[in-house]
Length: 389
Image 1 (tube, rainbow, N blue to C red):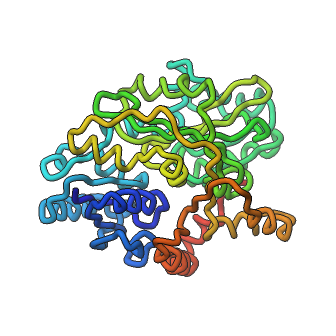
Image 2 (cartoon, rainbow, N blue to C red):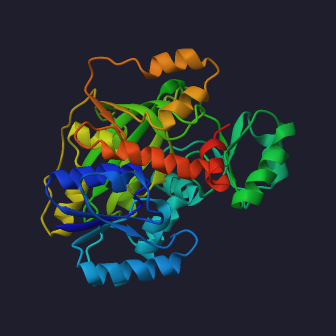
């Protein structure tokens, strides 16, 4: 197959490219800038630089449709939020030239909205943190009635960006105003600490909205420390509550890959769904290394081949994202020396990494090139450092 993978800046793109490349597919990698980490992979046969899908979505779509017509791709795989939304919105136009394993725009857009996700979960019976909607209850009433601490959360953001931790009523209005100005009307949710465990469910549904494969891992370290993408995780057996959470995706008729972010609440002794990422997820390499090869399942679906369901996978596979987020995690800790020693302590568990790979070392250089680009850009620096609480 000839496959276009977008968003070369993402570790999810790199994992997808490596997985498909090892199965001898022809891979083209796209991104809005040249020196992205995935473009340095030995599995990339051609590199595309397209208009920024966030700033110029219509130009991006025009460019990508022309590329699909010219290259005759068998499959297009969008990875980050903006590209996934844009391609979903124009799914009918893309399917004239290539296959896309993706849900309808209305479904995908709803799941990218954390408020809509909470409402869907409540209707489905999936447990979520106690949530207050300012459009239903006044800000003043929320401020005076909630049990602190709470989180004021943007409805659309990723990587814990924009979240504000509020420990008492006197901090509430400032946090609410900040999130409102930067991201629009926020949500207010109860704060659940991580002592019960932080889990991720990665899954893929076929064209009939049937789950083909599901992988669960526990996130043991995150950047930022307060909560964000996993920089260390371990593959585990699916907990008994996994099917309950997947019911939400089944009820909306989901198609394609999705990731569910879950905290186990020690107070109520139940899992709480934090959000759904309706796309490929950053730490997907741990699922692939454990035997849940989501990218190649997508290739089978695109080929019209009924994929073989995956019911078993390897547990205790350890994943690390060392560069650059592992270093940022160390810098985000008060005791940096102890944090560095902890990060670099290796054990006998099977190991996989976000970018590091002895048989494909190029993306390490790509990581440095991409990081230098981000550090030289004020807005990009803010995205890296100004998150969490």
